Length: 115
Image 1: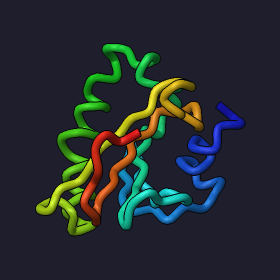
Image 2: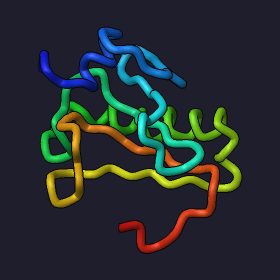
Image 3: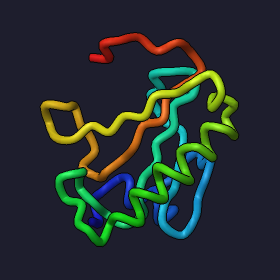
């Protein structure tokens, strides 16, 4: 999508504080962090939300959850202490950017319930 801010970040049209990147995803620091460590992991391919995923995206999502998130958490020194992974889907969940993104939050004790 040409007006999607996350697509522009993935294409390097908008600068970000990138902490990880490969051929399929990019991870960067959130501009409005909700924890000492707050990174967004996005697929470079535009996917509006979880509701738009197809079976073709199984490997992509597996990659995010089994490789990218643990690696980034380890690099941020939050893997051992613990971290939270959040995906907001739709308006009621406060998804503000219509591009699937995974929040990785850590560096402090998380509270429950989250929202």
